[in-house]
Image: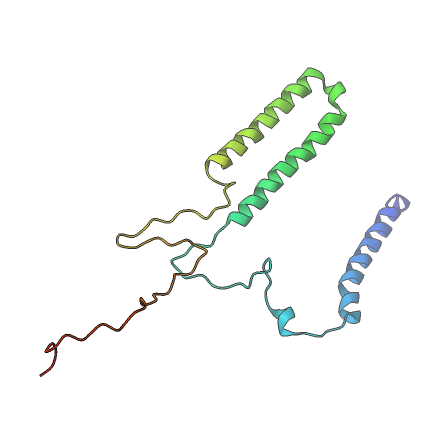
Length: 158
């Protein structure tokens, strides 16, 4: 009876040994030269900064990543279906039409909600303010060229 489980036990010991070696060996062999650049957080080439509390963090990157995963999973399901298409017959075709239809409905929903738009969402304009383009700094006020205005006589003097 023990000879039946011996290969499984040996395999489990080899797996455990490989896992422990993979975790311990780099700590023993790898050089340690910490620098401020290595210790700083890195997010897509942008220095992370804390946004003001009134401004929400944009989640567009994560929405696009989730959409990619959804359509990637759809592709993963299409390959085995294409291989077994002749054996599945009309039933397999109907099931794949339903599957692709559901994914298409999800795609249309995301499209209607603006999940595929790359422009930043428009913000409501407060009364009395002039909206500026988001990527341009406000222009400085430059006085008009010409002589200085003359001071009115008798105004503000004792």
